[in-house]
Image (cartoon, rainbow, N blue to C red):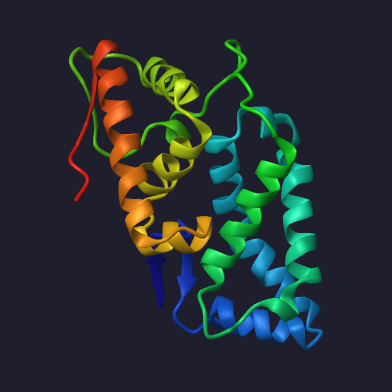
Length: 202
């Protein structure tokens, strides 16, 4: 039997070991457990990098390789009583920050994957092609500060809970709530000019 795991966006068998169990096995020297973690996490993390980091688009393979190397090197530092998902997302976020020390502008000619760029809840005043919608969203996000874009992508694209966002970005609950509110308000205000609206954030 397989269940859909919304945080991973992949099918995970209920008989498969948890991420936390696999991390313990990797720490014990099990290379097959590491290979399974890589297969399980490569696509979700690739999607996150492509959404969040314009200048990483051409180097996403190298960045992900560095992420998994860091996972392997620091696996003994992971506490299996905590969520592995937040730990590996934080490593990925930090890898992007290290690669991009300043806000990098998007190449206006870059091809955007509509499925990556369009979060749930987006509505348009007039019908438009999904490719055009993806580019409009990207332009709004590009003008958003990196601090707010971090929480916007995690909340509205990746659909992370406030608790998960706090774990990933090392923020307390009040700071997460404030930044999500500010990011949403910024997006709504600037997207409205382009005929876009965003559904309520429950």
